[in-house]
Amino acid sequence: METSTDSGTRGTHGTAGTGGATTSGTAPGFTRRALLGTAGAGLVAGAGGGAAAALAADRRGPAAGDAPSAGALGRGRVPFHGEHQAGILEPQQARVQLAAFDLADGAGRDGLRALLRRWSRTAARMAEGEPADEFENQVALDAGPCSLTVTFGFGAGLFDKAGLADRRPAGLEPLPAFPADALDPARGDGDLFVQIGADDALVAVHALRVLQRQAAGTAALRWQAAGFARTPGAARRPVTGRNLMGQIDGTNNPRPGEEGFAATVFAGPGGEQPAWLAGGSFLVFRRIRMLLDNWEALPVDRQERVIGRRKSDGAPLGAPDGAAERTPVDLAARAADGSLAIPADAHVRVAAPAANGGAAMLRRGFSYHDGLLADGSPDAGLLFLAFQADPRKGFTPVQRKLARGDGLSRFLRHEASGVYAVPPGAARDGYVGQTLLD
Image (cartoon, rainbow, N blue to C red; front, side, top):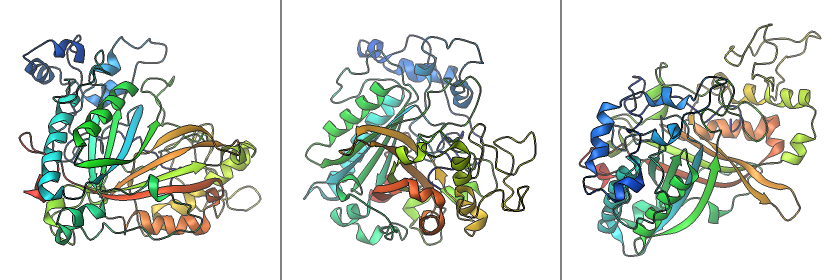
């Protein structure tokens, strides 16, 4: 599951499955530098309404052979406000900053409410390309919005600290221990989770630094991680991104508009989850180190059998001539010698929803590379992020099966973990978490 389906879904911010467009492209010249010298910062908001090209189209990049236009990536803009939080359905950005904070003793419900109001107000401004209203550090002065999204989540411990234990969602429970887990508690969990995506590294770092300074006295940084994906437009042709194993990663990710998509990703009204979470989701985070030295020692045909797909184009093994990445996987296909074309322990077979009672989730993971470990091996892999309506019915049963029978597990080490309730989006005059706290 962690590496055969990709984080790069091409959805939009708004109602799941409707294909609603995301606004993109402020007028050229509207940057943080210009806005800092402009009292009427509403210019950007006004320009956004007249430049409503679809973000997904803008993010696909230039045609093969074309040079990217200056500032094209910088002009991409994703509204902060909406039914769902930004950063779930949008196209994956080139950079991500992940962080978790622990609520300070004594902050309580009032302190949490004040922080989320401050964070939401600031995230909305930065998503428009405006300077932060507090603690602006001028790091991203020359950049536009760069498709910035800021997504907030709540860890289980937050509810006790804020006096909200009776409102903790049923799905927000610790993950079970999986075989071969080697989890570092200092790099996982946390009361408040923040995902910051952007197509420019400085824009993402700037946003995290501002939020961290705004949290001072109310919440302290617990852990932080930085990741990356392919820059939009970098490939010669449209193609799903690759992970650090060189595999095309994301073919089977569910997509907005498909039957059952909303029920897979978002908590609906009624049912077991509390009313405040309706329109929200659950996020499972896993830091997964890839044993790249071992993986790269395998010949390509062995790697393909571990995954169940051709490395060159992502087509499933055993598919007919002319097959491509989107060719449906035939788990019954046979090789010339009569054996299964996709081995019994191949990742795509073990992770397939059909083999897991229909369990599925929306992945939005990023690669990371943090240098070398003491033994000289790469400290590199996947920052796994998966949004789902209930981890007990999505991530947990699938990971149990992967841990028992996935051939890919021999090349992975799960080193950090977290589960968070992701509130619904905020109204324009509201803040993320308002349905819980007010």
